[in-house]
Image 1 (cartoon, one colour):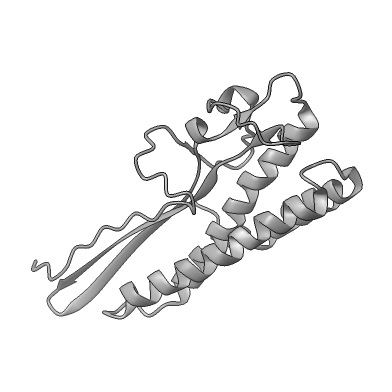
Image 2 (tube, helix red, strand yellow):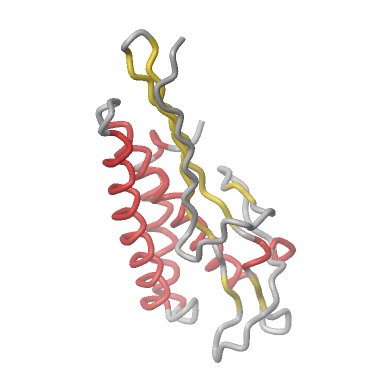
Length: 180
């Protein structure tokens, strides 16, 4: 077996916490708890909590007897040390909002898996995968910001309920691309 290329790339969240050692992988049916938030609360007016989550992917390329083989792995992570809450103001409603941020990251990981699945598994994969990841990440961040804007960071309860339902619906729609 002759290996032409073996590439490992790890792309992290917009906050680029590449040295973060502790992380929690998104899992179906598992929910965040306040104990998962281990960061130091920031003094941001009106903010009770902050979730740091994102998508990473790695891939490898090798050629055996002229046949290109490409493997990739896409994960959604929550970063406890970069996520925080103010204990005196925290409640289950706000925790659900923070879970929503984590779920949005998982939704975009599923979208990324779907896009990667459709790519040609040849020498163009690397360039195309990076481009798709960057675009997916821009859209994910905008989606996260829209979630906060429309829910007023969880304060608008009717919008919060709409968003929670929408995120759950989208996760189901992309269920075929969940991590197995």
